[in-house]
Image (tube, rainbow, N blue to C red):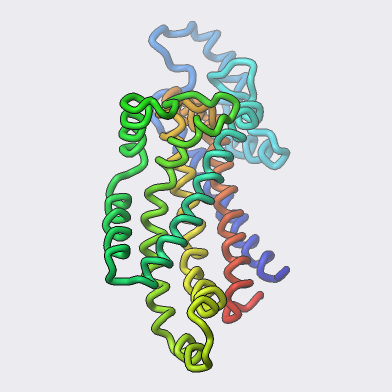
Length: 307
């Protein structure tokens, strides 16, 4: 297991460095700048501001300074949120984004696996057709389209749920954003789980288990689920990436004070350090999730060697 973790980290660290460099360069290639506005500043003031944020140095020098600060855990000051560092902004919004993303992942995995398994066991029945039809709609409709529809129906027409605000993490305020984020992933996971379940049920070792007289419940619980869920484990990291990037838009739609709000504002106003800090955080979380899925896959599948 230690060898597996070390091997993955040896790949993850250079990948993270490439992502940092890509985000750093991309932000500086964007037109405009963090201090570009309608009212031109006097040359002396603009020069002092550039020097204060190391923007008067060459791009390679800026990059080395930035990487040096990151290794110390310092993402630097925000260019637009005065008197705030990027670390402070991330710490204030990360709990909200983490709650939203983690809850969506759990809901998507639980419901997707359950519905896909039932559809695979009861294939070609009305239940199977209904699940697959609904899942197809869920795949076609993105979360940023689904969110306004849910708000309009459950919030404005029926008045059952609040359509915006955090309210200290009240569960009622989380239902709509979590639903909008998780439904497309539930659709994908359920279809994957159905196909995997059908394939597993037709495999030779399941036929052997039946010939030994094992009941259907035991076969499904001990053999089918363990084998069928392996493709879902592999899909966990890409699904998490989709939820994390989708949460940026969902937080804006539902007025949640998460990292997504800072990311959007920072991108529009060319807040280099803020956008880079959020992207590095998301990339790090994704790498950790990929490592977690690899370890979990190794535990569940004896064919994967732990080295």
